[in-house]
Image (tube, rainbow, N blue to C red; front, side, top):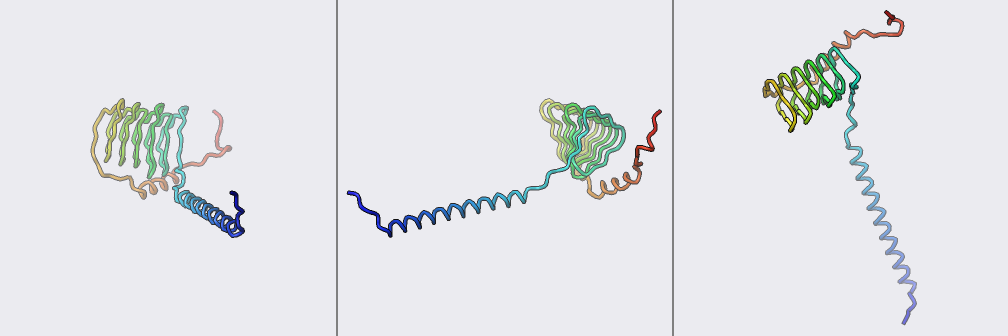
Length: 179
């Protein structure tokens, strides 16, 4: 009824298990290598600047990365490859030049971009010059719109950054005096 396993059967069974284990470990190694390749191909995190809701800024901002605006800015914003986002609490009076502009707060003035999105709580009063305009349900646009293929060029912003850096005055603790 019961038969003894021969040594050959035991050896073959062990070899088959080793082959299966080796194949599984090889498959796992290949899967890990594929995941590592995908991770190494993932783009680096984008840099972003945040303007808090307690900030009120008067002046011009020139940057090469994304900006999130929760506060109030009166002036112009120029971003090369970045996304300018006006959050629900944010308010901008002036001009925005960027590849992508997303408005969920309030904007009064001129928007020049490749893509302009007015979100559910967004309000744009002014002029937009854009290739793609999207207005979500609840978003408000009052003003004029011009379709344009104008792009914000990298060199334009670099030149402006270099010019602005020359105009910036560095403040140190000794140069600040109390009134």
